[in-house]
Length: 337
Image 1 (cartoon, helix red, strand yellow):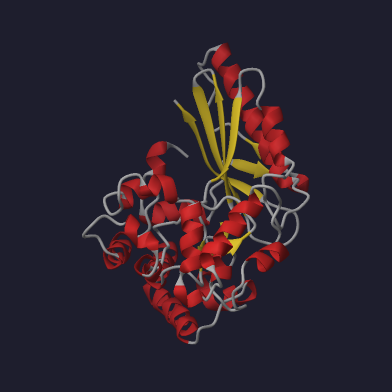
Image 2 (cartoon, helix red, strand yellow; image 1 turned 135 degrees about the horizontal axis):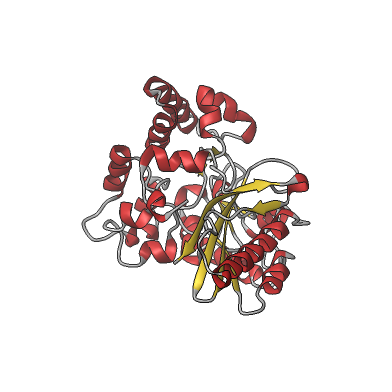
């Protein structure tokens, strides 16, 4: 996917994410095989060799992600980090990061901006209502800096935000969900029906589970899943500390000692692997608290950066929600320059 395509908004960009237009293929056993997105024709032998080396390094990391022996938790102690170090050889630098470790301005509910310190990231005079209205009018933005950079203080989105992330039906703004349904299906009446089902969940204070998605998404299920799902949004091992602290501090989620809880998570993730059961011990909150819709132990979007010879290969791989071994698809691949 080239840079121009990544800057598009609305249905085209969301279709690319929702349908996971492939720049890769998944081999038997869950291993991911990277394909070069550009022709080698006319390139110098040295440039071709650099491209092959970068692609091989990225593939090594992606294969290690697929082979994760603890798929219910992604942490700095996983074997994939050995693969990152092994791939960084012979003048090749390799970096792996959680691409969705910040709040997504496409999906964030306005109450979260109005009732936590995340609202301080908005520029003076800008409001959560304005953000909501912009999404309603324009649809989600593929490039969050282009779409929302004028609404947030300088460097806020670069430091604390991310445009990569699934939309959890339980904690995504209801109006952007309606807009997303219409964009993906072209069915305005269906979008209204979907919105009504989401509103009933909110009014009844009920949380949708994965098994409820077919009923909630209705005819739009194939067009919207996995972009819309019911999985915890963030991995606490990599979540931006400011976002973590403010999520825990949201008053209606009734987290006991939110500041102390954030400190314990940050301390634990620096020295150990946090599994789902560990997270339940670290965070004291009601079982039906929506904080559990945000905090999890799985990374859904990984970014692999490979640098060699003054050039970079950037690959973003999305994990597909589901049981069994991890399954990934590459949703972005670009070379710089």
